[in-house]
Amino acid sequence: MSLSAVHSSSSPTEDPVTPPPMTTPPRKASVRLQERRGSNLSLLLDVNTLGVETVCSVSTPKEVWLQLLHTSSRPLTHTLSLSPQQKIPPNFVNAAELDVPGHTMKDRYKTILPNPESRVILRNPDDDPGPDRYINANYITGYKGAPRAYIATQGPMVHTVGDFWDMVWQERSSIIVMVTRLKENNEVRRPRETSRHGRFNIRVKDSQEKDGFTVTDMEIELRSERRHVRHYWFTSWPDHHIPQCIAPYLKLVEEVETYSESLVPTSSQEVPASGPGPIIVHCSAGIGRTGCFIASSIGCQQLRETGQADVLETVCQLRLDRGGMIQTTEQYQFLYSTLAQYKPEPEPAGLTASEPAEPRGAGQHTAAEPRARQQTEQEELIEPG
Image (tube, rainbow, N blue to C red; front, side, top):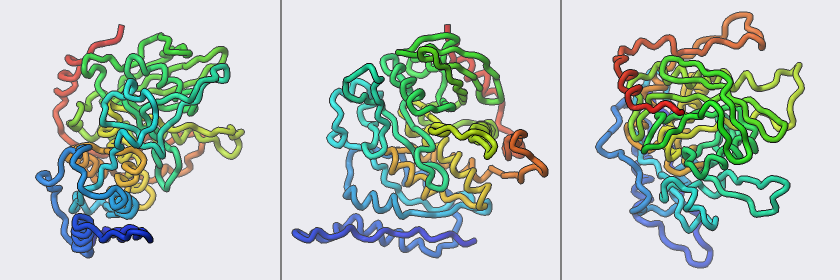
């Protein structure tokens, strides 16, 4: 079968004053990319050469990294499971690049920082003349280059929960996706029945247990204004690893997309000035599991509309927006497996805008992973008080 070419980026523009020669590492990377052009092989992911990307030991100039992120492409079709994979630059942020005093107090991990060009900036309320506030979060480009389709953020901590809800309110987000266990590192992360965080009162209105995830409808109130937020919690994704079963995960991806589409006003409805806000996705650091979910969502949209998904290009775009998205080889391989199992179905005949389609594709999967994982997960959870 034929694979699309992976285009190597050209050398950076030479400085007119002191033109440095191209360093050896970028030139070798370019040759490797060109050598794969026209390949018709379908290979397994090389788990020996891919691993957790680290912040340190950077040997390639950042300009060359950004060129690769901007130009890499390799479509995936249903006839191709895994293709040869280049080492994608992580595009992590150096602390010196983030000129925000005191940001370290609000970072869960000192090496996982928001990329300055796309980071979310919290505006202060009208009655607060102080400077804008910091949150470790980035806007993420969506399918077909849709700006600010998602927000990827770290899991809120005790002293940053108020900032998290400020972001939900400011961005007018109606969907939160949590891809983390209820308790990790002795922190309970699921919303309580009724709580107050910063300026907001949060009330849980309804909760539904589904296969592998929980859907919770919440009401967020500020002064006399109330807004509805739907919270999706995928219950069985351990940090630095992958889910044991793909079918419930695909069901979650599709259900989030279906609900998101239902929030877009039809032509007969009055369109709000702001439109629906970004889908907020978080795990612990906001790059590994979060990156997998967003890439899966974009990839499923690509497959449904065009019949192919460009995984490499998608991951490159994610890392342009937030460094380190999709952390491990295992997560990258899981993304490929997820898209390979996705089977989009045509819209039912005569479907109207008021009759949303059932989530597509997930019901077609017949993976026989053991369900004993549910009992194991429940034993590790601590229900909120």
